[in-house]
Image (cartoon, rainbow, N blue to C red; front, top):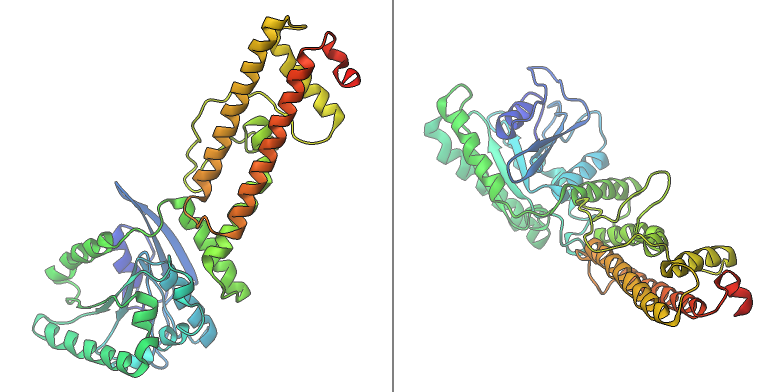
Length: 386
């Protein structure tokens, strides 16, 4: 984060091994995203264009993430939304500034403070968890302590003035570090990246998978665009339940999530892990279509090899019941896997559970119908005879 040419892209590249372009003139326009894999984590970096210092002001980083605010090419509202976007998602927000040229700390954080009145962190408990790291660039060794204390004092003045509504408490959960960064070219300048990297990796993980983060990212962008300031969790739950409902009928009848345009297995939507469990792949019946019902019943009945004897009927009864139970267990595991991170008290999730129970009871009733038909002498004319 920061004004133009304070080394935002350069710092990100050294911090997490990204490859953002950088130079003495503006090279970053808009926002660029980079995914940097490590042994245990995926680090997502967002690099925003810097602002031209026509007046006081600056920026944000998050996951980590650098952002330039107070741009002459953006409105105050756009700056504010960018701050919300970054502080909501980021585990680490790095505020890089040239304190030697601009010591008006209050104006630096204007967009941060304005953002506290819109998207309330209390309604979004999984967001706004990032540490704010204020990096003061190009500080000689002998001035580091004095400069850091001066900056901290000015931040304290903002907190005292805004009381409980201050941006540090509301957007960063009260977590802030002020770092006086060594002059570029010095040995300390480069070794400090290792210290900052440790700070980043020490932050609690707020997104358990890349898929979960991507959905949160897209949903947040859509909410900011629509100026929807409601609960993020409620929006994510509605989206997830809608996606599961769209596949539920197919999942119960075939054991697959989709049949067209390509076959899709039952998976966890967030991490794409395949849902385990025994499933014969048999097609079961839900609904009221006589044609489909006849086809499914005949296929299930043929498990006995044609017109069964009474002993075969008992074996067929057990076989169909076993296969149906396996299907229902696997579909239920699929649902659990995809809604476990949301509150079970959500009306949408309770509605999904009720729909699953109703459809599964329907399947059991239809399988009983098949078993009755399997005991009749002419299975091909089952429906007419019943």
